[in-house]
Image (cartoon, rainbow, N blue to C red; front, side, top):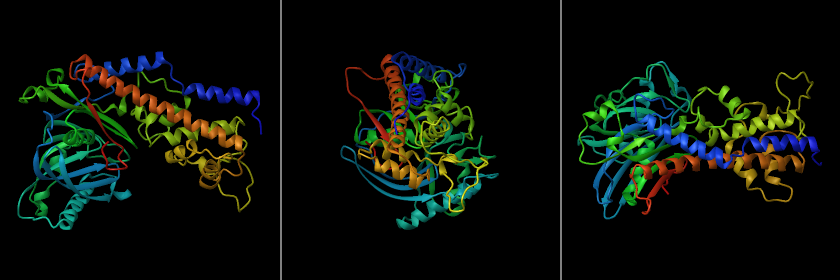
Length: 425
């Protein structure tokens, strides 16, 4: 099969939707920096919440002690026992992962979720044979937005990644946990966003770390800022000997004024359960990239650029009983992991891409040109995501240089966690 001129024109139009010019990138970066500044001023409007963490100072790698850590990230719960040994960042971690059942993610009472999480903590303490008689200190790390009022206090202002409890918003996360009622001598001494924890964990072994990023299914970033730049009512009464404090940007929501969204982005947003928000996240993360590709494939099939036909449920077509409905008719059935397989496919006949389309997505028979087109689409969508991520990182760094938070002549590190692997790089 050889693409016709008309098909090539349609394909080129799609490609152009995901190409970003230098002028566009400059505009995005400038808008991002302005949103950072606005978010630090309560009187200004910003897509980013810019939440102060109350974590001040910089780890040296010489800190010592044994602590508990609880992380709620998406549908995963991690309970850890962390032993800081000092000696330039030496540590030991005993960790266990739990899954949150689907029926515990939404409801009328968030205490159902909290009770389940507490059960996980109890189970972990039994696993590590911890003493229930001596008080242990714990930090809670969360993947959703918390408006902190102090280091160990924080009010839930937004639930994400499929969570939905009508009574959660406005609740203090520490008050929700009632460890003493379960006979646990656990004291919560700190609440932190997961990007703050990423920054600190990396800084313990690499003290020059100034930025922490989580980018996987979702995305967020924290960085060090001067306390004087943070105009927040709760900071006024906060005393610290340090000039710097970590700020949680909540950059997942960036973009309503600055991102050049195309028709596929708009369709994904309109069909999402959080329409109008988290636009940067929808353009760049594992939760949404595969869905963008799926929408493009449907579009290219409708315009006969691809040779296979995707039959939708409402199509009035007689199908044989043995026919298997194409999974691409269903939202989020082109998994983002498929993109990597297609992009990395170097086989002459693009065999791995054929498997993804025909066997995983049930498209029916495909030709090599079909596979080549899908491979290109995956590249375009992935390349734009990486470019947008890099642009926002550059925005944070540029802001920090402008504000003299970091010296442009000196190196500093960025800690990143992809949330799939508990590894800091």
